[in-house]
Amino acid sequence: MGAKGLEHYLDNSATTAVSKAAADKAYRVMTEVYGNPSSLHAKGLDAERELEQARKAVASRLRVSAAEITFTSGGTEANNLALFGAAYANARVRRRIIVSSVEHSSVLEAAKRLEDEGFETVRIAPRDDGVLHPEDVAAAVDSGTALVSVMLVNNETGAVMPVADIFAAVKEKNDKTLCHTDAVQAFGKLDIKAKALGADMLSVSGHKVHAPKGVGALFVKKGVRPVARQYGGEQEKRLRPGTENLPAVAALGVACGEFDIAGNAAKVQALRDYAAERLGAIEGLRFNSPEGALPYVLNFSAGRVRSETMLHFLEERGVFVSSGSACAKGKPSHVLTALGLPRERADSALRVSFCKYNTRDDIDALADGIAEGLRVLAHR
Image 1 (cartoon, rainbow, N blue to C red):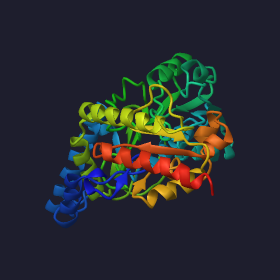
Image 2 (image 1 turned 90 degrees about the vertical axis):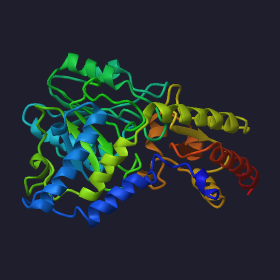
Image 3 (image 1 turned 90 degrees about the horizontal axis):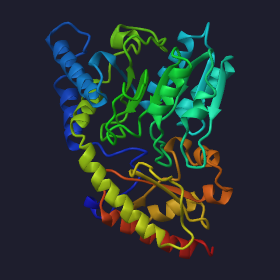
Image 4 (image 1 turned 180 degrees about the horizontal axis):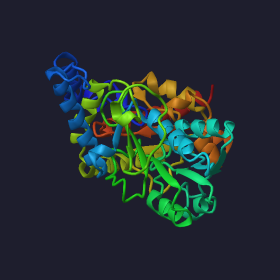
């Protein structure tokens, strides 16, 4: 981050630094409010109050009731719980699962597993504008469709999907089809109203919003009953049993209280525009993020140097970016492939992702590093 002077962290879609207030809350809960929230003595009741306070904080950011929030270990578990839970709940009468081809791996791999178990999986690709179109998704919905899962913001390109319109079209075609959205990259950046989106389930994660890793949440609309994926105690209405990770949960509640969606959006938009100006002046560089993308994510290709090579060149200069989703661990981007980008362009793609702590100094370090990298590396 610019405040450190030497480091320029621009990989916030992979993870964010934990805010001081969130870290302080986690430490206090670990050392002072360490009772089990399920215990009936005073220590347990104190812990339960922290748990429910955090639940209300998450719920308020999604405009839902606290009773509709289930805490998980993160976005991956929330997505898995939504997909498997919806599929198994309807397995006898509805066995079609529809997802976009640019979903996070936690959705695509879950869908693949369901396919292996005999469910029918349909994958819908974005059009040339980088987003899914409601009519394309609705065309795949039939009387046997159990679930449609479409992310709100793509983690690699920042494309904002018209989820509300997609889910409205789905429900018009089959009102019994459940609709889930992975809102991990949108949470804390967009003003999310889960029910206005038409979502029956919605996933979020803590470590994308300056809370610790290891905590997330799944909104489950009242009346929707996904099947649990694990069994044990009475925690989280038995949908996700097991003692809650209270320090991380409480820290997530604090992080939610620090959201300044409008203020941060204006700042990040200015940074993104400055980045586009600086990077756009580099010969041969092309942007992969579509028009209207969330300004927190900017994907581009230089074309002459492979992503991993440039990534490490920048790292040596204190600039930290990504070659795509951190969960892919360097594998070719399925998102850019689905968008039909030529292999050379996909292989040289880098993702820059901003947060409220970034500055123009970070952008200057990035642009200078890319320009130098192209001069040095392209001739090796």
